[in-house]
Length: 174
Picture 1 (cartoon, rainbow, N blue to C red):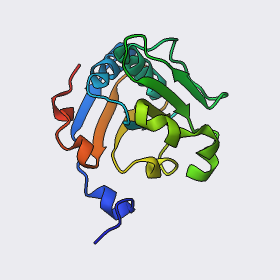
Picture 2 (picture 1 turned 60 degrees about the horizontal axis):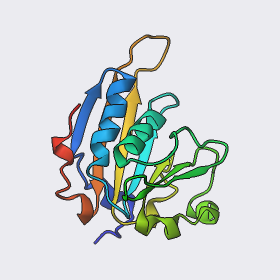
Picture 3 (picture 1 turned 90 degrees about the horizontal axis):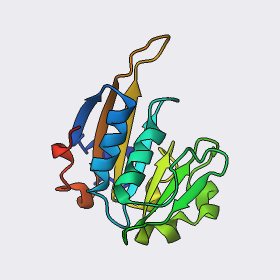
Picture 4 (picture 1 turned 180 degrees about the horizontal axis):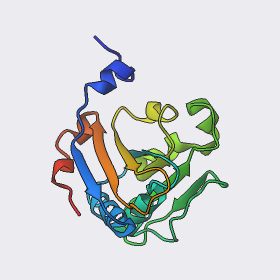
């Protein structure tokens, strides 16, 4: 039997939704719709190339959760907490791009303390924060690379763990 955090165990999870988005506005709208499915304790990992739209998606999540403050890239501060304005969970937005290590390097951020009552969204978190929760949502955003005006993004949402088994990801659209 595979350990719950082993790569082989995680590959057993099939994507729950695959979407093609054609604009930053659609990426942000996906974030707003996804926010309706989120609850305190959720861990969301955003993966994609530079400029793929991870922060745009996080901005939509913040709007959908009704949090205070503009959700912008926290690259230089590493993490920002956006408290709820509507009585919901706070959004903890983390950018792990500059962090080379795994969870040990991120320990100073106290994400394990924030997670139970917040929604924690980690850009560039693959291989770094999975041990925070056996239940997590992986959102992978692929963009067309190279010198192009093509704004299309392919987004794959994969829920890991029982929390995401029937969370409604397959019904997401923009």
